[in-house]
Every structure is written in C-alpha cells, then in structure tokens.
Image 1 (tube, rainbow, N blue to C red):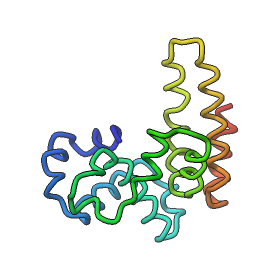
Image 2: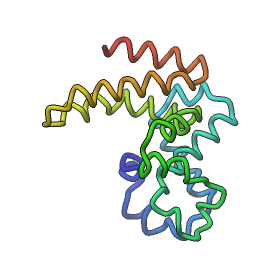
Image 3: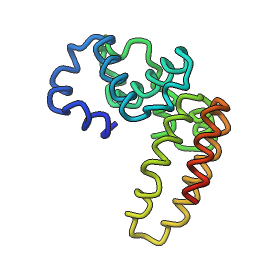
Image 4: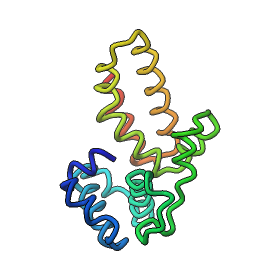
Amino acid sequence: KEKFEFSVNSSEYKKNLPSMTAQELNTLICKFMEKEFSMLSRLLSEDDYERTRDALKTIILCDRYKKKERIIEGLDFSIFRNVLHKYNTRNLLEFLSDASNAYLYTHFYLISGQKSTDEQDDVQKEKLLQSMRHLMVEAANYLPSEINSIFEEIHNSLY
C-alpha cells in the first residue's frame, strides 16, 4: 500500500481519492503494476490481470472498507481483513489460495522480505525469515505454472 501511494504522489492521490471514479483508480493501479511487475504482469491473461489489479486495489483501499464510496463498490475486503485481524492458518490459506493474492505476496516477498527481516533487531529474526520463506513456497503453489517457474528461479537464486 505504501509503495503504491509513494509512486502516485501520495498527497494528491489522497486528496482526490474520495471523488475518483473506479476507472481513474484502475488507471493509476495499472500504471503502478506496469512499473512494479513489468514483464511478469504481461504473462497474465486479461482476466488474471484484472483479478490481480482488483486484489491490489483491495489491499490499497483496505482502510476504506466501511466507507460508502464508489471506488470500493464490488470489492470484497473480508479475506484480506481476516488475514490482518484474525490471523490463523485457515484465513492465510484462504488468502493465498487466490492466485492474485499469491502473486502479490510472492512478488513483494522477493522484493522486500529479506530486507524487512534483516531490519529486525530481535532474536526471532531467523524464525520470521523462515516463516516468510514457507509462505512464499505455499503461495507459489497457487500461481499459474508460467509465473511459478519464474518465481522459483528467482527464489532459488536468492537462497
């Protein structure tokens, strides 16, 4: 969410968000996806691309789930909010079983996972890193095979 907001000039985006149409927000998210996911997003079918865009939109707008705004119409926040606020294995697997969520988790794990665990000062750092790796492998099980093989190559080259 923060990465998206940083990429779209956060102050202007937040000021205009309540009056944005779904199409305007989709355009911003698609531009972000092209920058952030580059080649990988081109491997997705049109339906998978739209599902990934909507999954990203759900994450970006998760704090607006109670507001009655046009831009959140049709979005289901329950699965993502369950992972955040009612964390358990069942909710996590439900989240990861959606290929779009698995794609997003895997991508951001590979980009930021190691870095974020390196910044941890506590003794649980290795346990956190192992948990994140396990989740990445679990998420990869739900990815389309073309994308999964690319993520596996990247993951194997890192470890």
